Length: 232
Ligand SMILES: O=C(O)c1cc(=O)[nH]c(=O)n1[C@@H]1O[C@H](COP(=O)(O)O)[C@@H](O)[C@H]1O
Image (tube, rainbow, N blue to C red; front, top):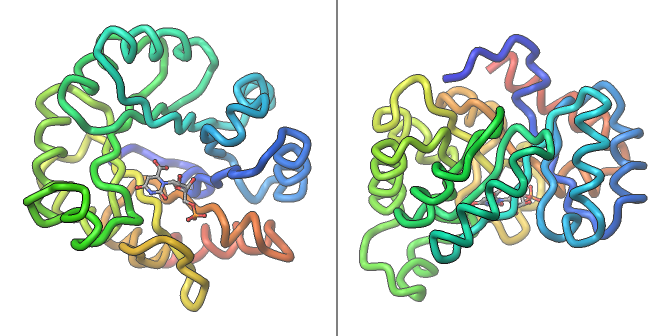
C-alpha cells in the first residue's frame, strides 16, 4: 500500500467529459476538494493530453487512462511517448505481452496500472467474451502475472481488493473504479462497492466519475467521498 499523507489523494475523479473547457470548469468547481484527476480517451481525443500537462503544472496529479493493448512494440513506444507528460499513472490491459512491453517503455515517475477485468463485467459478461474462468480467478491470475512482470499497480473492483492485496503484497497499488456512494445509480457498473467498503478492503485509490461529474454540487460529493474513506 502506498504512503498517502493527504487523504484527498485517495480519490481520483474521472474527467469523462467531451472537451477541455468542460473539464477545466469542473476542476475549478471542485477546487481543493480533490487533488487527483483521471483523463481517459474521450477527453484525451478532445485535447486532454495537453490538459494533463496543465493540471500537473497546477500541482494536481493525473492518471492517464488510455488502456493500451496492442502488439508489444506499439505498446512500448506508446508508453514511452506519454512518459514525459507528467502523469502519475497510465493504464494498460493486463495481458502478459502488453504488460511486459509497458514495463519496457516506462520512464520517469510514470507508474503502470494493469486493468484486470473491467468493473462493468459480471460472470455472464466474462463468459460471453470467451473467458472460462470465474471473474475473481481471472483477476487473481492477472494480478499474479502483473506482479511477476513488475507492474506498479492493479485496477480491479474493490470486491477483489483484499484477495489482490494478498497476491501483490503491500507495495503495489490497488486502484478501484466501480465505486458508488450508498444509494447512487450504478449505471453500467456491475462489481460495485461504496467508498468506505473499498477503503476497508485495503485499496490505495478509488476512481469515481459520474457520481461527481453529474452532481449538482460536485465539490460536496468529492468531499463526502474523501470523508467516508477517512472514517472507514
Ligand atoms: O481503468 C479504469 O479506470 C476503469 C477500469 C474498470 O475496470 N472500470 C472502470 O469503470 N474504469 C474507469 O473508471 C471510471 C468510472 O466512472 P464512473 O462509473 O462514472 O464512476 C470510468 O472512467 C471508467 O473508464
